[in-house]
Structure formats: C-alpha cells, structure tokens
Length: 573
Image (cartoon, rainbow, N blue to C red; front, side, top):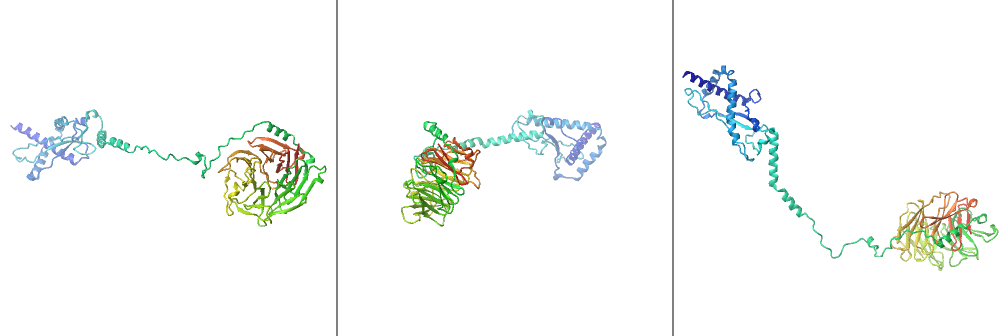
C-alpha cells in the first residue's frame, strides 16, 4: 500500500509540475527554451499552445495555492530525473488529444476548426483535497501562427498543401474567399447587361438627305457653279507655234536699232500698231515722253522728245480709236493725250491731291478710262465730258495700286495689282466708300510689280512678283476663284537703280509672255504658259544692259525694250 501510494503521489506531483510549467510558459511567452508543440503539427501546419483555464473563485481557499506550491517544492528534487519522462508523457497526451480533432475536421471550407481540449484533472490526495470542484483544465488549441484566432477556417484539400507555410495557406484561403465573393456578385451578367444597354442604335433614315459640301457640289456660296478643274496647259508644237518660233529666231538687233531716246531710266514703252512705220514711244523717270521713228535713215532725225510731265511717266498707250493720239500717265497726278498732228499734249484728267500709277481703256473707243492711284483709289474718267475731273471715285480694298488692266472681252472686269494681293473687280458693282473684289489672289509672298490679262481672250493672267516667280492663272471663268496653273522661276530682283520687271503677253501669241532677265549675257526671254522657255533674244555687243520694260508689236515681229539709262533696243526681222 505504501508503494502504490508513493507512486500515486509522484504521479500527482508530476501533473502539478506540468500545470506550473504551463503557467510559466503562458506568462513568459518570450522564453523559447520550453516547447509544447506536438510532432503532428507538421500535418495541419498549426501551432498548438497550452492555455491554463482560470480558477473559479466561488470555492476559493488560500491554502489551495499554498498546497500546490508545497507539492511543487516537495517534488522539485525529482524534476531533473523525470524531465524526459514528462516530455514523453506530454507528447503522448497531445497526440491523444489532437488525433481525434484532426479526424473530426470535415472538408467544409466555411466551418471553423473545432477546439479540442483535454481536461486534465489533478487527483490530489483525497485526504487533503476533498474539494476538487475547481480543477485546472489543460486546453490545447490549434491556431494560426499569423493571428491567434482559435476559429480559423480550413480549406478543402488541405492535405495537398501540407508542405506550405502558414502564410501561404492563409493567402490561398484569402484567394478562395475573394473568388467566391466576386462570383456571388455576378459581375459577368451585369457586364453583359451593360453592353446591351450601350449598343449604338442605328440612326433613323433622314428624309431630307445628307448635307453635302458646297465645294464638293462645285458651287460658290451664292449658288453659282464653279468652273471645272482646269487641266495643266501643254505645249503643242503645231505649225503655228513652229512658225512663231522661226520668226522669233529671225529677229536680230544691230547698232542702227539701239538709240538713247530719253533722259533717265525708262518706266514705260509702247509700239505704234502701224504696219508701215515703226514708231516707238518711251516714258522716262524725268517726265519726258520720247518718240523714235525707225523708218528714217538718220537716228537723230527720227527722235522726238516732249516734256509733258514733271515726274516719272509710268504708263503709255497709243489710242485704239485714233492712232495719232498717245496717252501718258505720270506720278504728278496728271493724265494727258498727245496729238502728233498738232504736237501738243492736252490734259485729260488731273488730281493734285493724289499720285497716279496706271490706267487702261474701259471702252474700245477709248472714251472712258479707269485710273489707279498709289493710295488705293480708282477713278472712272469720261473724256467726252468737259473738264479734267473724274466721273466716279472708288475706294478699293487695296492700300496701293501698281497696275490696272481691263479684260479684253468682258470689259466690265478689270484687274489690279497691289502690294501683296491681286484683285478683280466688276465696274457694275463698285462702291464709292469701300468696294469688295470679286476675286482675290493671295498666293504671292512679296511685293507685286504687275498683273495683266492675256490680250486676245483674257483666259490667262500673268503676275510678276519680287519672290522671283512668274505666276500664270486660269481666268477663263471669273467666279469666286481662279486657279493657279503655272509658276515660273525667274530672277526678278533688279535692285534700286534698275526699273522693276513687268512680264507682259505677246499680242500675237497669247500663251507666251515676255520678260527681262538679269542673266549674263544680257537677254530678253519669252516663256510659254507651261513654264518652258520658248526663246531668248541675245544682242552681243548691242545688248549689254538690262531691258526691264519690254513690249511686242501687235501684228509684226518687232520687240522694243528700254533700260535704265534711256536707251531703246529694238529686235526686228
């Protein structure tokens, strides 16, 4: 009896020491020397921990704790000897506790692991401890190493991931829960409904039809049909053109056809349309008007000089109605008509407050004139009325006007060359205050020197600009715009001391233009409207200066050019 009794006391003492060690582990969690983790924890990936259930204070007696301490003190000598036995007993106890719990956990993903506990009742000496209602229950709970939540969920198929860490298992659990959550939201069905809602509806068919651009319809804003797109001009070497080139090649210059006619630079040149006599008129910077009759044997006997103006004579025309009359216009604000039969110049129009730049005949009988001013005004003059005033003064949309030219067929139209723009007006719609042009040509980038219609049909317009380009436009249909056909590269930089170039049409061949040249040796050039060079007039020793202003006889093959020293150069066949 004594032996069994001693074994029982030793067993109870070992259990009490186990309880004290558990308390010590709970209170000192930072101490890592004592570990109660069972071997089977590698299967579930859980960290088992031992908790001490608190005492019930209802039957609390102070001598109980003292008695436990006495028991602990009593068996402290045997602690070292029984340490291995205790660890083995603890492992067996935990294995016995956890095995039924692991088998009891089902595959439900949403369920929590049930708590498995083993209540270890201390059977103390019944004689000294009869009141055993308040016992210490040893509870072993498995929980995650990340959080100490005892109600952690488990996922199905956990055995397949037994080698994963607790963090990875927690991550897989979160992924599974998130997937289930998003599946419960039914986002795919909502997206399908939204796509059906935002599908574009077919626009209803318009009864009035689709709107179309006026440009595509080829009409201007007023409803007038635009001209068809012009085709690029081509050089057709027919018999007429070949004959024209042959006649140009036969034109030569010699010492007898070069003579100084005026004093100073020549600003304008005109050829009399006579078929018998060759008469050349030149307007000078000094205000002189010189006439040279080449039919005389002596050059000095055939030159006549007049001084009708005090400033440069910028424009000269023989009257189409009376060949004995020549009209001259000057910067001094006067327009005069010279009568060769009486050798006098009568005043036709005067404006002392303005300076004139150019003029042209509105009527074929030369009774009405249109005059351009340097300040941008336009005057209509009727020679049949008495006096030297204008009939109508119009304020144009240009700040300056350099040249004015009337359409040869539709004489109600005239073209003006300004500083940077070319405008075409209709005399039937001129406003004295501010007249708006029918067409504006804005392709020029620098100062413009001149603009002229082709002499026979007026289907072309040639302009001379300081950007070293000659431009040819298609004016066959004057509507809201006239297209650009050809751009000819040509040096037009004459400098300060030379008269500016002005390209003019050949009245016999209206698809060819005549212009001076800065190239060496000195020459006068003729270009086709396609841009190809037709002919160049070389004079050798007789042509050593630049002929800035040139004109061609309307029916004969005679070319007259004036330079900046007052000389006239005439090419004849």
